Amino acid sequence: MKKSLLARNSKLADPKKQINYLNAGVFENGELPTFEKKLTDLGAFPLRPKAIEILQINLGYMCNQVCAHCHVDAGPDRKEIMTRETMQHCLEVLQNSKVNTLDLTGGAPEMHPDFRWFVTEANKIGVKDFIVRSNLTILKANKTFETFPEFFKENKIHVVSSLPHYTKDNTDRQRGSGVFQKSIEALQSLNALGYGKADSGLQLDLVYNPVGAFLPGNQAALETDFKKALWRDFGIVFNSLFTITNLPISRYLEYLIASDNYEDYMHTLVNAFNPATLQNVMCTNTLSVSWEGYLYDCDFNQMLDLKVSSSAKHIKDFNEEILNNRNIVTWQHCYGCTAGSGSSCQGAVV
View 1 (spheres, rainbow, N blue to C red):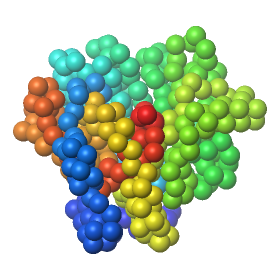
View 2 (cartoon, rainbow, N blue to C red):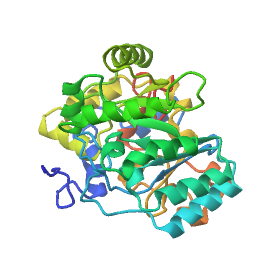
View 3 (cartoon, one colour):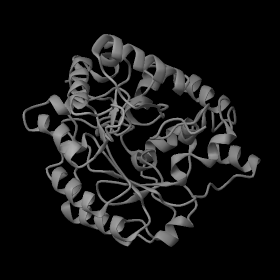
């Protein structure tokens, strides 16, 4: 298996080194304005949250795939997973706060040994929307994982699935050989249970990430293209498509550097900055929880170890009032979420 250049022994593996890299070159020499300066000039610095509506929990970095764009640097060799004690703290927050959406991610969250227990316990609390972000291929990994679609249905899980494209070549280029076929089979299994079908109450959404150093296209137009192609070629239906901009972090930063696209890509992001996105970027209503239980404004900040600017920095110390009154921590990668139509884990924001 090809190892990432940003593996743990890489010069850029340390989040602080990635932060320093993101502040060098075009930003350090003043060629492009830093994100803080851009917001300051608009009178919008610092960014402030509205209210915490979504708790996005990273259950760990273990994954059955090694995707070229992964900002988590997840893979089969990663052993970091959330303890049951930390999971219990998360359940307590869900029970005692106004959070109405639970969003489980990874890695492949299904690979956590306590995944079924956690989903069952969290579902008892009755959050409004219970999301599991699946890479799809995990559902076809072996007989144990093949039962997850039925488990999702029993627990009324909102499945958000990664599919870079509706063609084999583009998908396999980003996620690895054979990923497209397994993804199609997984989607067909979910459809067979009612997922993605009208009036079933079983939500199935897809996520699109560009396969190169460019911004995603129009979300509505891409959704139309995906629906047409997947139905025509495979009889697959789904509810919505979310477009997400690739942020210059971890493996995608590695790709940009190796392909000599980093400076051009940063110019693209900065030139496409859209002030209208600032009201709805995900850090304004989402709180990210790492596998260790630390709190971040988003999962991108989590990968750069930019913890929340609050006295409540761990899930066990969760304080809704304090966290709702924090300043959001930003850096140059934030241009990715504010370019064009904007980007969040729920897709475009304007």
